[in-house]
Image (cartoon, rainbow, N blue to C red; front, side):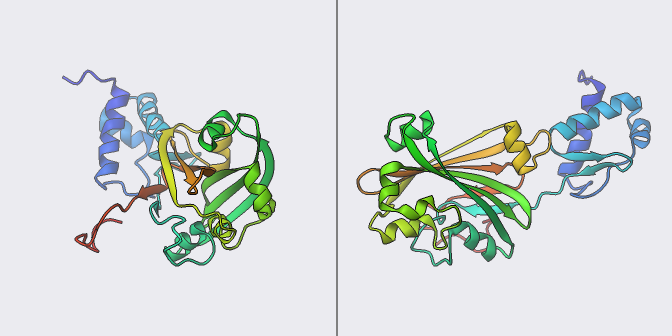
Length: 257
């Protein structure tokens, strides 16, 4: 005997049908009335089950239009190649990767002097509260909010690379710019985590209820010290990351990328 509350039974059954393609992305679910009949449940019970799926980001509701299965056109980011100067690219890695995927990049910038938060200072080996230049990007793929990216540069580096304080994009990308000054990033350390978005993140990324964010922190190093700390916040439902490590000559071209 199923001891789960009835509304959870409704949600679980519909979730399975969404997963197996009975209701594909963009399709509409049956009406609350039809679902009430199917599950022999009150409309309030059905509505509670549907609300659970809404909070999980699987469906959305529109007044007068019922419930629709959420569409996710996922963008795949190759984190190994991102900023790798051995791969040919025009401009920064974000614009190159999005364009190569046949999609349209767009980003807005702001630049400001900011005291280093403790977690940034720890990674840059500087004193918490000391001045950093923050370059903040709000990035879009096909006009859909894709990510925010906040990169902190220590003050000593800005004195050698004054273009870091320019409010607009650096056309060749900051990594290439710094390399042209003799400050070459030779390695990086990545940290990946997930959590639910802050209200500000939900606003900027237009995240619906129940959708987490993916946090990617990359600390870049020269041969002497860390030179920048970048925190990228992705919509968890629209992004997937992969890495290439070692010799992949045996990998089939048809395998998932």
